[in-house]
Amino acid sequence: MTQRVVIIGGGQAAVSAALRLRSQSFEGSIEILCEEPGLPYQRPPLSKKYLKGELDRERLHLRPEEVYQDLKITLHRETQAHFIDRLKKHVATSNRGAIVYDKLILATGATPRCLPASVGGDLENVYTCRSLADADLLSGEVRPGQRLLVVGGGYIGLEMAAVAIDLGLEVTLIEMQDRILNRVAAHETAQWFRKLHLDRGVDLREGVGLERLIADGNRATLAALSDGSAVGVDLVVAGIGVSANDRLARSAGLFVENGVLTDESCLTSDPDIYAIGDCAAFPFRGEMTRLESVQNACDQGEYVAEHILGQAPANYLPEPWFWSDQYDVSLKIAGFNRGFDHVVTRPGEKPGAISLWYFIGERLLAVDAMNDAKAYMMGKRWLAKGQSPDQIALADPDLPIKDIPTKDTQAAAAA
Ligand SMILES: Cc1cc2nc3c(=O)[nH]c(=O)nc-3n(C[C@H](O)[C@H](O)[C@H](O)COP(=O)(O)OP(=O)(O)OC[C@H]3O[C@@H](n4cnc5c(N)ncnc54)[C@H](O)[C@@H]3O)c2cc1C
Image (cartoon, rainbow, N blue to C red):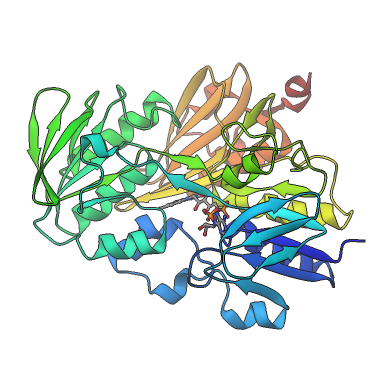
């Protein structure tokens, strides 16, 4: 019988697991160990409304403090898990001694990659944006007229650029790959966002890396770029990806490779230890996959809670979705585009709305919908049902999306 559940990490995945345990009537103890000081919070607004000053700190909290108290979920804040003793089934912590578990959930998230010190990454005005503390430090620097260099053209880098432009900064964004969004989106989506940022005044340079930052005292003032040019900077933000926080798992002898490896039910190589959220790599469509998204963190948290209680299906099957806000554009993504072989473009009903549909053969894999909530909803529905739209009809903007014929491609996918 599981009496004591311990969760390491106090983010979206951890809270989701704890809440689902309680909502499914688990009566044992639930302890969350989190090294951060405050209440668990949502990260997406950190590079969006919070940084822009449009969202109060309290609104970031996943739940008010009373909810944890009422549900008897013990939050150990500013408590770092140092070591997992799998034989004794306890977690050694920085300030609470050893905490015993029956089931342990690793929800340790990820750490942003930093620019190396050898190129000036350790200078005072060089930032990343992962935590509330990072966003608060950045907020102190983003002032109109300042010159911002964003290194990295992924979603976080692009969101940072958009917020900074809206706040009146001068922004240069460099991406060392030949295009932005190289890892996550098709050429067509990248092209759409490139135009958006150029139109708003970002000096966006693709195929250009950072050679080094030149400092005056402890602050970077000039960035030497790989194309031989240089730009003046007042602050620098690195959005160059994250690494899974898998150190604890590794030192406990669990299987780790770009994240804590799990089976289809989110169990690690120890049958009493699960891994969920950004820190976990699980089998998905034939490959070990880490999904860095709120959807995955929340869904895996809920799944694992039910698994502990013997109520979950054998496999965690994600239905991925993601969003990004840049200027007045709301991007919504349904599905997972890995392995696509072509993209179909559909202009939306309203001006400026557009959706890009990823296919492998006849089968729909994902949709990127820009300011087109209808396309996103329909795409999500088709994906959930294993249906794929007729591609010629899809590309016809005069045909209402609800009238587009579909085909069942689930069976083909399973084969
Ligand atoms: C700026 C930003 C914008 C984002 N925007 C979006 C978006 O628009 N849409 C979307 O879907 N996703 C977005 N994401 C991603 C999303 O926020 C993450 O996928 C999600 O937060 C992952 O949740 P998690 O619980 O797995 O990890 P985290 O939220 O990272 O939580 C892990 C926690 O564990 C703590 N921890 C780690 N090790 C230890 C230890 N040894 N002891 C104690 N505590 C420990 C960490 O300090 C952290 O508090 C964004 C992320 C960032 C940073």
